[in-house]
Image 1: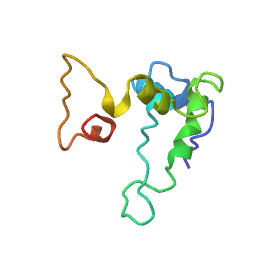
Image 2: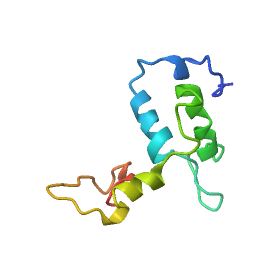
Image 3: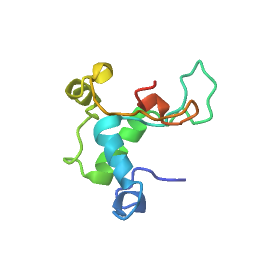
Image 4: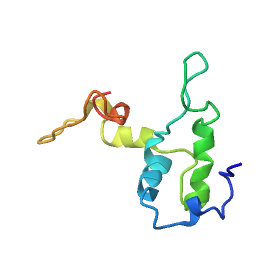
Length: 107
C-alpha cells in the first residue's frame, strides 16, 4: 500500500524533485488538482483523489506554516482582475486538447 501521508516519504523530502515547483504553485495558488470525476460522471481517476486528499499533502511537502490553509486563487483573481484583466502585448497560447486549458484564460 502506498502511504501518501508519511512525512518521511521521499516525495515530501526530496528538494531536488523537478515537480516540486509545480506542487508549490498548486498548493499555494491554483488548487488545480487532477481529481476524480463527480459521482454522476464516468471517471478514470479514483474519486478518493479529491481536493482534500491532495491538500493534506501540501504541509507535508513544504511545512505546515509555509502553505496557506487553502490555495489563494481568489486573491490572485482579485489582484489580476480575473476574467476582466486588461493587458497589453500578451498572447495567450493553448490548444483545444491542452490538458491545462481549464486553468487558462481559454476555459
